[in-house]
Image 1: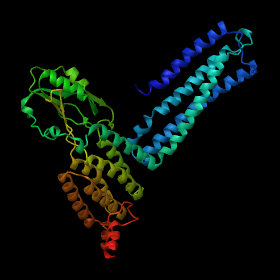
Image 2 (image 1 turned 90 degrees about the vertical axis):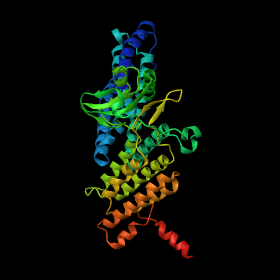
Image 3 (image 1 turned 180 degrees about the vertical axis):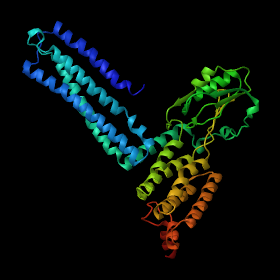
Image 4 (image 1 turned 60 degrees about the horizontal axis):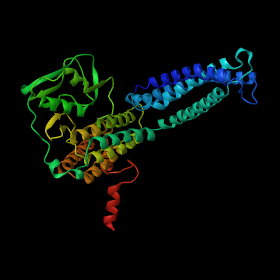
Length: 427
């Protein structure tokens, strides 16, 4: 459900309730009054709630704008979606609107026709809505603490870990038959029986309906090969997919429906995007205007954890089969080297003159070389270590700083592992 519908549903429910409940009370329960509350006090109470909700709604908007502006300026403009899509913000706005409308409706039925009656259940409901509004407002204010860098990095890291768990199988859980699958030869574009093109304004691929595409491929008796990956921005006259070996043309409407497009990139089915956000935070912290290498080190902590998890997963996930085990869908997926390049290249380039960042990068790569199980991936990490040493040698650091930068240190500047090992060896 679109998030903007949440406050609309609250408003609609409060309007309907405000029209129905006080009227039923006035018609059937006119003899019930709130004990100990005079008509004037009830009217003042409801008026205060109605006017206060308007001010509180303005505060909520201000808090939301502060969160968006701060995250965009301090971390990355791509983090704006992380806060603007928070359901709590929309539920809080909805509760404030509902309290405002229902308190006005209840106020309209207090002392209706000079009866001197205060609606009992409507009054209690307004009080309950007020308590709910205060709780949601407290939770919203608490979210301001989530703007601290540690919390932001943790939220992004948790998003990446969830995507990895959902998309990739652990290598040690693959069966013998699964090990034999993969690396199929995909037909060339000249053998395509059908090609689907995109026409329109630039949009970003947010996710694929993999099951739907597999069913379409099975229906046509062929293989669907996607030309674009999740996270790609497609423009006018871009090929989306090709159908090979099909007995007949598939409906373009069904094919387009299986490719979900959006205005911006999301982390759904895209494990690269959380890494992209972490790298954005790191390189912004390394910019001359900020000069905060410690934040970059904290971002590398999360990046290393994601890469360690990816290193033990089956990354050859770009194939999907039907229930009979027949290949029906091929879609682009990044390789282990792609993940390493995305995670470390920009940080290495912008942090080449920072001893702290270089030490943390080396520590991350050494840890990856020890944790991954596939020999090819270990060799890729070791090549990247050599690349890192070459970058340190070309940096503007003097000889002593370069030697220090080649010591791995999980804290960046805090505890040199190599020196500890040398001391242990000497004893």
